[in-house]
Image (tube, rainbow, N blue to C red; front, side, top):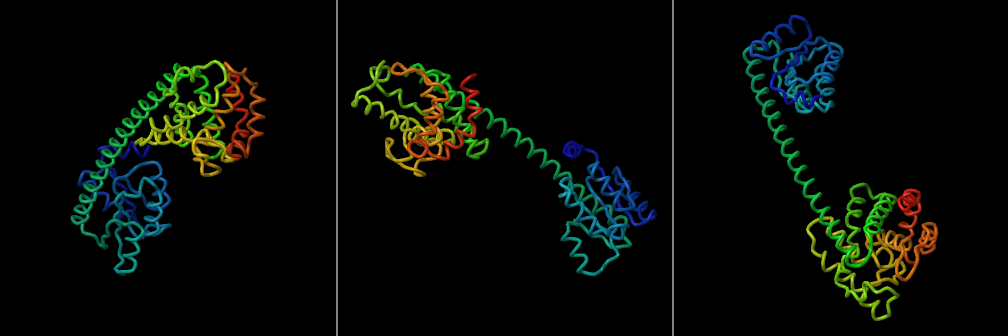
Length: 349
């Protein structure tokens, strides 16, 4: 509501007086310069007015009933829509300490009673010009923020589209299915959330996970598409897909590409150090790689391959739990277990 009012062209002014005569004098002076003027005689009414309406300038008499002017200014500055609105205080006070206090709580300008009508009008005009400049800057900032959001959103959509199309190409190359890649991505996202990583980081992992095996496009067909188990030499060649994937994704300039490179290079490492390609162990393995390792192995167990039948989801679940602390990070396994209901629903969907 306040945001909409802020963008209006009308000048809306509030006067808070200590008496009807003083209030009338100030209001008449402001009406003479073309302002829409509202008046209040005590602080409670002022706070109620400011909660329901946006003013561009407020003029407060220090001696306002119920709450003095300094206290009222301090209360107004606590309200988000009034953090920057100019406030003039009219005061009989000449003590420097009180004037300094008034400025400290957020008073923009001070006038001493009895005020000069022409001086009040001139200062009000100056502060209203400042207010108009604030409004224009706010409009520009909002427009720029909207443009940046739109551009960022479109870039993110294009980046995501490239990821999923590349993942689709990988399906054709190595014989996996889109459901496998999408399930690994979703399970990785759920594990990330189970670890408390937050929605933004979980989404990056979700988008990067489909590229975990991108390096397989460099593996020869006779090995990649072999219907039976691989021999020892073939296994070594197959394992090179990790380095190929890292090379494809290295030196990325976006968070998504950088995380995808980490995942491609570390999702075959094992918690106990027996994995490849570097034999990393424990926390030396990047968390993203540890997360996708659980998701990838679980879904691979549940998927039919030329050399094995698909496992039941419950059997694969038991295998993941059994390998906690050896193959897998125990924290990732615990997060996997905490999201099991969602994961099982995904597998049965």
